[in-house]
Figure (spheres, rainbow, N blue to C red):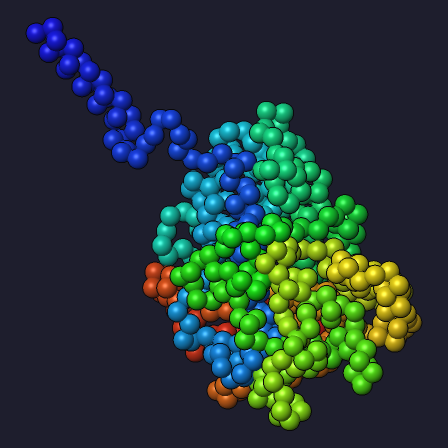
Length: 510
């Protein structure tokens, strides 16, 4: 009887202990249920690099950097038809891989608040702000206020509301970092792969993101003076926000997705793997990087951004046409073009840029240009070019010679907005932000002199330029049809509907 009572007591005790965890068979008392913030942050930073790439994956074609080799061979990049796409990985990367891991029900912000790690709260909000800004700039209206409330059909907020939300995230993130608690968990180089726990650099990064945001709306809000204040503040303390990959790795998760291995860690997304293997530099890119084609003189950055093709030539093909470009010399083959791999940004081990310093100088130049300070604008424009030349490893003598060449404006009164925007376009090679700039200027030749309408864009678009991505067909069109219907995103020509800041832009010449 005594032994029976002991056994019964043991069983009841076990049941009581198990009930505390709702009979969760996955519960392990030896291991934590959630990952602490210092272990989660590196993965979030890596995912953000992939998320930004997933947007640039298509935007680089819409920005006229590259075109398909065969021409008229890709529905999205050549004909601007997104109606047949099955997945839009860029949507998933933002909401799940980045956003959910920061702000979801079990995200870093929740755990950091529980643990008193307000430094991780601050950094998390700044990263979420950048992720939302870059995502809304390719999709437009998106769930923001209801994004992580557990609903399968959250309301889409307007892009104007999202911009306000992004600024609020930046404000809150900076406030946390200016008041880090003594008991907060350490943020060192192994936890923070960007700034190694330097809160001042994170605050400057927040100002850099804010500068980018304010630039998008300054033209119709009369906001150039405010923008200038913010960008000057950012520049004073800014260090490049770049995610670095190891020199060599066998893991797809440790390679730049622009690299020649064509890493495909999320294999279920057909739009993740880069297609530079089957692409060519455009005539727009080559003209921008050419000083004198007959003499074989090129911008020294050409040899840093690309590697020589087999035949050592540097031709450019028309957007959407590739080798079908009738203006190309007879007998041209793809080996007559620069190799797009193993350039500064396109090797497996290349770093991936969130935001780099030369962008801030060009933002400053654009603001000063519209504030009618041509001397200041010229100085910032030249600083941006010099910063980019040095970044890419152009030697000092070449930097001096190029800055003094006819390719670079010397006289403040001769400076045009196209000079600023084209040099920024080169500096931001393959970055999604270039597509934002092109759309702010409505693809206008006053800012981008060599742009043209692609030959193989479908006739049904009526000569309109592409303005946005389609929402993810396997989530939004299935689980949130009411919002899709409300926005009109079911229409075949939805991607030609300008975003909020593009529809209000005063920078167009059309």
